[in-house]
Image (cartoon, rainbow, N blue to C red):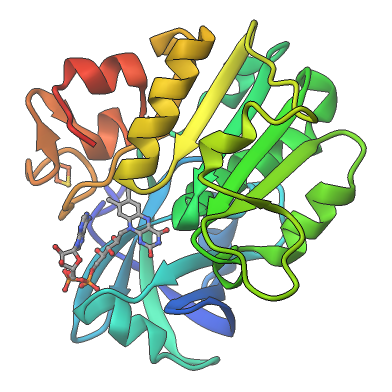
Length: 280
Ligand SMILES: Cc1cc2nc3c(=O)[nH]c(=O)nc-3n(C[C@H](O)[C@H](O)[C@H](O)COP(=O)(O)OP(=O)(O)OC[C@H]3O[C@@H](n4cnc5c(N)ncnc54)[C@H](O)[C@@H]3O)c2cc1C
Ligand code: FES
């Protein structure tokens, strides 16, 4: 008889290096101790998540910001409480544990032939980074790729190396904005939706999928703008965050009505989010 794998069993991971991203947010590069686990894990889809265990403290869900095709595996984590604080204190060489990948992910292949519009606010770029890198690595599959990204201040823009590359790349249109400019900022000032109507921006509306991730207030305004511009509710996709325990559809911690965010999501269309009665 084949041995059945325990789905709750996390696998040992080793932290390689830590990079400060913005205030309270760090990117953690890591690998599985067992090379076979690394190979299995690398089949993840953009938009999926994993459960991270910090020994003696607890477990928490985190998105997978790398594209499956990138060599290095990493998480980008904001410190907000006991588990994330403990994770932020970890040093290169230390061990933690990971199980996953979990969730449905973005259906990147079904968006072939469409324009991809990414709209992110603050750390909302974490789950979208994977899709953006995946789309660029499969550039011929998609029509236009537009990124609209905003943060409160220039110092709070995430993944600045990627933003620089995207800003210089011919195959992608990348527009940045900040709520409050500081010395040296020459870009747009205003909320992310203010970019949509700039004279230098021609937003792709027909045959487009809009990926929207960010704080609730930004989400509400961006959705309103997109719907007014003619986007269909089913062509707007986002990720929902819920308290999670098992991550595999057993415990019910993440349920909204009949939907299990950990398995039916975390990616939902705006039409589904509305149907769930979710006020985000
Ligand atoms: C699918 C998914 C993907 C996620 N991806 C990331 C990621 O890539 N990077 C990242 O930094 N964070 C991510 N999060 C959020 C992260 O899981 C929480 O910040 C973490 O669980 C907090 O644990 P803690 O023990 O540090 O905080 P706690 O001590 O448990 O809580 C501290 C504060 O955070 C609030 N909080 C905790 N968990 C959540 C949650 N799930 N939703 C809303 N509020 C919460 C609590 O109400 C409390 O106010 C994700 C969450 C989900 C569900
Ligand atoms: S986290 Fe347990 S059912 Fe979703």
